Length: 161
Image (cartoon, rainbow, N blue to C red; front, side):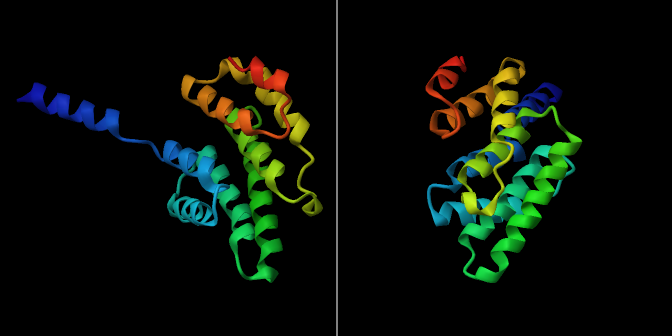
């Protein structure tokens, strides 16, 4: 009986998708449609954790909310709040490649007039220099992002093996 319960427990833990993986998958689709963006925002709002990666996705969802809101006077507030939160998370965790990837993706996709695009080169360099140190799952996620990135050159994209 103990063996049976142990096997069941292992299977449940193995097939349970983590909050970070769920947020990653939703975030990677958020820019494809307004519906996907709204789904990501709702998903991120429900998460509460001290994990810096989850906090970064929550900050990205605030910024993304500026894109989908119908209240024009709130757009600036959403961007400012989200950007401040994202910058604080990165300041406290400067060696986390996923946080840099989130910021890079936000800065690539936000209108240039907003002025939140000063870290693109820095983040790209950090990601490329630290790519080999990442987990296999994160490497796959980085590659997927890089292939559609406007900031990475074809040579840089090819260097991600």
